Image (cartoon, rainbow, N blue to C red; front, side, top):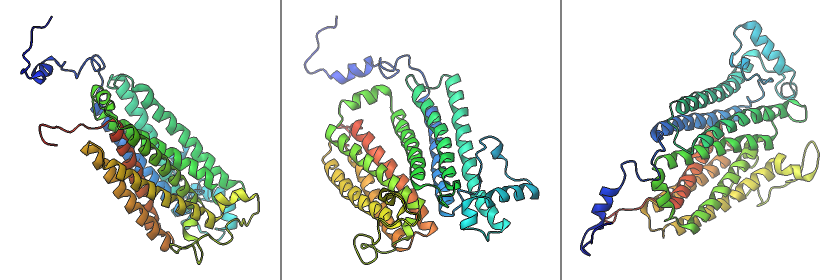
Length: 384
């Protein structure tokens, strides 16, 4: 039993002495090396950002169909001599894209698009190796904190699925119906990449704090702000998918005017399909309609994002307010970038910057949501 305490005694002093060195009973016996896992995740994050950027350049340079086979292992070796190059070029010459669009392409021109696609696939192989080597090392050395093995393993499984979906996407451009990959498959491929990127960011943010700190912080969560941030996150993800549809059919170059699309608010011939088919396909294949949907969703994301930011300004936690202010700032920049990209008919550099802006916005919104769910308490004594 404890002795009597004075009403003037500072409780915090005993509380500090009684606290276990490991951060509390919740952390006792958990082990693991959260810092090592975060370094590994940071490496994967950087590689995945590069992968998305190279993938965007591969699409914008029309290089995605230059390799017509899926060879996960043997495909790591590029053509090594003239005979190999001729063989690869012959395979490409049999594709619809070459016959209908690039029939005058020379071998040297083919090499330039081949290297983009080869580099994109090679970067995917590198990410797989970094994940596998890092996971095995961290697991074998017991550096993975308790409860995290399944989540980190799931990242690898999603990466493997992503590779298969990548080939599913490429194969759509080899069937003869179109000379590019199917835009909806491109959207799925990019969407999964952003899911993996978001999970890595969320895991890294969580591993930056002790499990006991997260449990205590969760009691201070602002439920309404979490719901608003969740809604904004879903809207941003939807807009990213629409952006992939725009990139998939070069819709960003269709109406280089703003705020109107040409001379009207709604694009003319919005449901026209050159190859025919049901009207619903226009939402995937008509450049004007695809760009219109992307624009309207962008306005919705912008308005809702500002609403969420205004709500977050009333948060009691400075770190939460700062996270949402950063997300709002990135949102404004991204909207301006989108308009500039459209009015300049989506040149390569601007289109790539706009895609990188989508990554920055996605991560900023996820970070703000994490701060709302697990607030960083300010110190009253220090005046923060």
